[in-house]
Amino acid sequence: MAFELPPLPYDFSALEPHIDAQTMEIHHDRHHGTYVNNLNGAIQKHPELEGKSVEDLLSDLSSVPDDIRTVVRNNGGGHYNHSIFWQIMSPDGGGEPSGGVAEAISEAFGDFASFKDALSKAAIGQFGSGWGWLYLSGGRLSIKGFPNQDNPIMDGGVPIMGVDVWEHAYYLKYQNKRPDYVAAWWNTVNWSAVNDRYSQYR
Ligand code: MN3
Image (cartoon, rainbow, N blue to C red; front, side, top):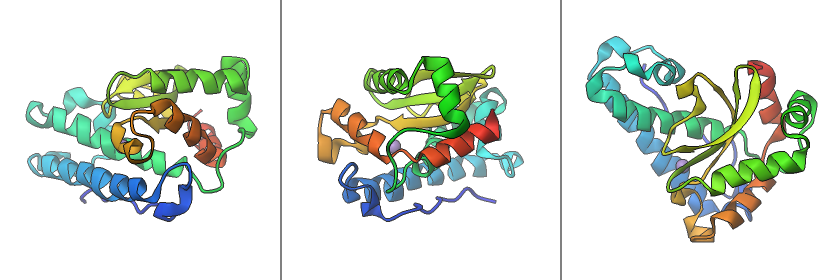
């Protein structure tokens, strides 16, 4: 069964004014859509991989055949990352977390403000294209910037929430002002979905 582009769980304009509708449409339909198509193209060359989940592929890239490993890393990573990204944003987003993830964040980073600062810095400081991720590793919450479409799952971690800092995620509205985009992005965070991910994987 081929991988499919998941529908955006809200309208393209739903995250305005923080993320504009045109950016959302291009980002979801074209960028994410292309990752899905390229991933399917690679898997077609190796039918023995059909039926593997994207998590299976990314968490064990060394077992993916040489000739498609980079394509799977970049496009499987792109599919996986964006599938999470759409879910952890919401038109009713923003504010501060509650529940288990809020407690874990305070435990790991001191308080919410320190956590927000650390994830913002990781994202803003990621040179070139990439992501800032909050993830579980060895049962602990960590924050790091990852290049391209890499994801903590490639290093044995579990991604909880992440912010896309590829220019395609913000350039139409924010141009080169990545810090302004990241600051606005916090107003879209769906803490309920983030807490669900944390509760599921902790
Ligand atoms: Mn993107």
